[in-house]
Image 1 (cartoon, rainbow, N blue to C red):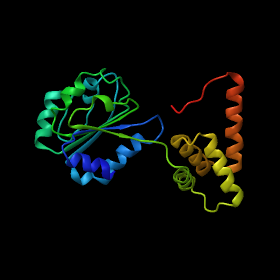
Image 2: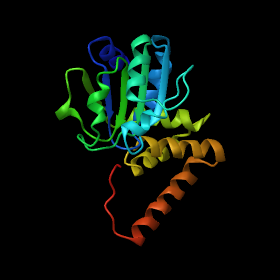
Image 3: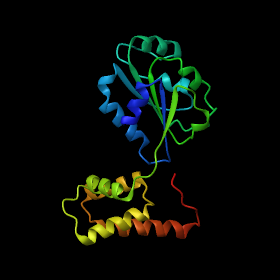
Length: 212
């Protein structure tokens, strides 16, 4: 979060948060918006769909009705401090021509993306690469999300086995933890169910499993 803030306090106007699916890109962007909300007059979060031109039409800003165009956005941002988060900007580096034009808008942009833009960044753009959490960090996250009050020595080992089965994938670990919280079933039962699911999948068809 501090790295994003420092970038925006320099000459950087666009930050790409890059990483594979489910690693926490969107959550990081949302957390930044929450923690640093006082830095902005307005914050808007949009899901990328088809093109940036279509996506920015759906921007919701107070005291403004109708579709947002690039020229409208320039006028609004010239008078207000605005943060725009564009989620799931999973396009090839040269697929959307409007990206270059958006650099003329006087606001801060965060793009979450699986695309690596590091080779084509301009002077006012920067990319932050997210990697998998360390095992102990993911373990702590799992315990917090599952709301487990007590963890036996056996549960401790089962949680670590479960995380290993997920290939230490952040979103998968969180979803499994929330299933424990909502259902009340134990760690061992979740581990058994997840293992059965993986076994069934691999028996149906030989596939390559990758993090995405």
